[in-house]
Length: 372
Image (cartoon, rainbow, N blue to C red; front, side):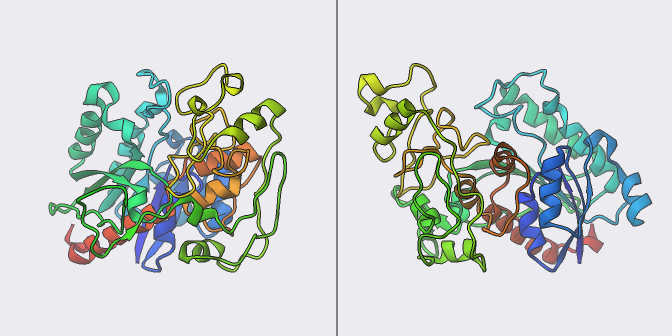
């Protein structure tokens, strides 16, 4: 069994794939936000959670609490907060969150895992003109790791959402890491290899069994039986629908949302309904027959990045956001609605984490820990 430590654990999206496989054991996790850490523990009760700043987390904690020594952790997974690198944010060079990769490197040096998985947003590649990613790779290489980097789209692995993420895998073995192969394809693209792959999962396929609710409404009942494999996986044994409610918007905003066509933007609206402010991708409706665009912590706010339901005059609910990230309906979130949306919006999609886990498992079969 491979032992894992999860850094910047969030609600457990990156942990999800590894936790679902009996060949892996997540023994410890670190997360600074109390409600995020609480949510992680609700879903992974056997994991020792260290709810603290990563600067206060070290091998000494695991030695004192779990008797774990240097080399006992086989795999480290995690991605520092992405806000400093996101193209949506301000991308300030002096944002201290942009330096947390150095703490990640410190933990790697203390633990000496055979493999680590570092995840972050696409914007990391262009930060500081590309110099930051070079610095990060250099830091890890100085520790003796063979570095592998690839940009993966979660939709290519069965997630009903276009969500590109940088996945860096470091290994102590010199053999290159083989990234997972795509399981899904974009049907709108031409001249692509479709053999053995399925079309992208659409937003409608992901949430079509959830009841239609309007402005300020909620529901705890499913609209129908599962209509496809994705819905069956999400439903599991759940019979009561949780976190499916929407805040009340003012009448003008409701009229705006009602007037938007499928996939529509404010440019599709009459002049009198167009918002007075906002960016090009705000106050926009999603598509029913396409995957969602990348959801964020503000998935319940119409003035945020495209997040208005394709049919109802409202933004996405917390449950719909969870569905688009691949969290099953029995997965628990904790705190206020904004807390829960933060937990969901910041997570790694579960289908992507499972694909990464499978690739790590195959790599370790070919290159056992004992050989590293």
